[in-house]
Length: 116
Image (tube, rainbow, N blue to C red):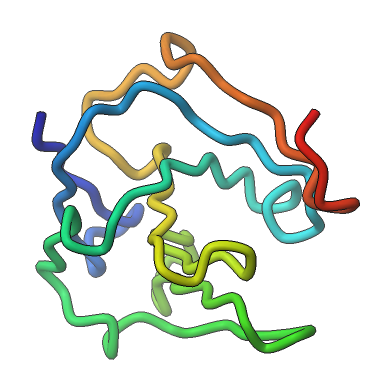
């Protein structure tokens, strides 16, 4: 299935194709505070409608993870996780028409890097 996604103001837009069969809910400091709900996909599944250069990149700590968010509305749309640098994490909450409550969700203890 193909999903359309965007930040709150629509400045950063993308589509992603695949089976949205589970979500990851991480409790690390940035995910917990921003409410990010992860869908791990291959980068080839994501089509950027807005170049990532238009988003703001946030990097901290080890410098390995990449977090892109809209410079206007502040919504995080896409990440490259430190533990999976060959994958994209799409923020499921940015996808149009998706009922997040209906998606099986796996908790991830990102604070301690353990599956819960």
